[in-house]
Amino acid sequence: MSLFTFPLPDVGEGLTEAEIVSWRVKPGDTVSVNQIVCEIETAKSLVELPSPFEGVVHELLAAEGDTVQVGAPIISVEGEGGPAMPTPDVVEAVADVEASVSHDSAEPSPKNLVGYGTGPSTPVSRRRRVAQATEAAIPSPIARPDLPVAEAIPTIAKPPIRKLAKDLGVDLASVQATGLAGEILREDVIRHAGQATVFRNLETPKWPENREDRIPVKGVRKAIAQAMVKSMFEAPHVSVFVDVDATRTMDFVKRLKASPDFAGIKVSPLLVMAKAMIWAVQRNPTVNSTWTDNEIIVHHFVNFGVAAATPRGLIVPNIKEAHTLSLRDLALALEKLTLTAREGKTTLEDMSGGTITITNLGSFGVDTGTPILNPGEVTIVALGTIKPKPWVVDGEVRARMVTTVAASFDHRVVDGDVASKFVADVASVMEEPALLLD
Image (tube, rainbow, N blue to C red; front, side, top):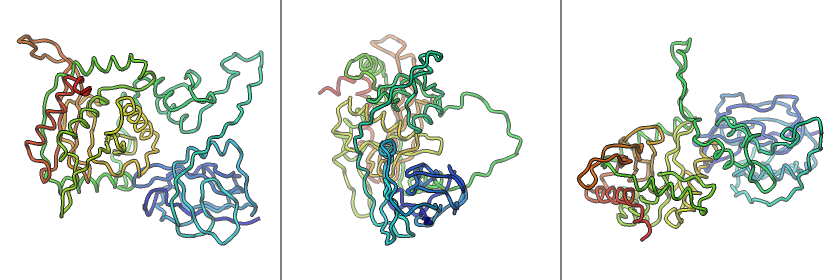
């Protein structure tokens, strides 16, 4: 038997530390290759760490709540020195691991699927996960006449999907699976949930017994604070507002939902707003720029950021090369981005390189606001709630679906006339989505 030590890997593009959120194992437990042993929180995301070893847990070298440096040992496992051969179900499970780390090691060690080394070595390189298509035969459930049909058929769903279903209050037994092997996908859970309420406080809690809570400033919250202070005090913000008759946008959304081309795809006014912003960027390129002390970099591509509220704080993942996407592909990308953020699986790559951002205040029932720029960008747009209001049409007051579009700009880069033209262009598409067809 050999004693193997598992160091904390670099799970995110240069991050130097992470907090141990929870342990899934304890000393004396038997673990297998790629079994989840702990959950860590970096400055950007929540990550589950799988074990690179097979054997018995010898010692947990870091406690829950500890902040550990990358490369520091966190767990030791006692096991055989030979390779641990992965089973087909493990191969499939590893397809969910978004990134992995390679280490050099002079000692022979068990083979593992996620690329962790065994020694206290320094990370050598970060490699992309190569998805391996594995077709495994799904055994038919044993027929039992004493069980109802619904109970005799197993529910196939991976742990992240089960967690998402729990958060949304969805009974997996009632979800129709669309996976190739009969498994339930993230999209299936979201569609079944309808309007997700996991981030809304629908019930008023009682006053706590304690007089106050003290929340450590670390992880995602610390990163948010630093970014917002830097943005607010380095970039001179200027904001522009316009009320918009979005009745035709709402009609357009209804038509898209009824279209066979958008069957099973989440469609909302945010999709039209995103497309409107991309169209307006093409007409007003300087709103899609980055300020440096020596030059202004105008980007002729759009990495479209979406501010996403998660239980751990605000993050801004972005859709790469969004200007090249069709309306349908953009809808799919927005849905994937939202699902990934809610599961806490957003990577640093997903959040880097953004060029312009939208924040959807309307999802919280808010009319408008003055959003703070995402660091490195010069424009952020806020979409308010869309609701019936009196509106003058052809000299008559009618009930129309009205919203407010607000935008903040870095005044070092974007002048008032360009800001106004950009917002007016966005508003014109919200009033008449047919402009997107030119």
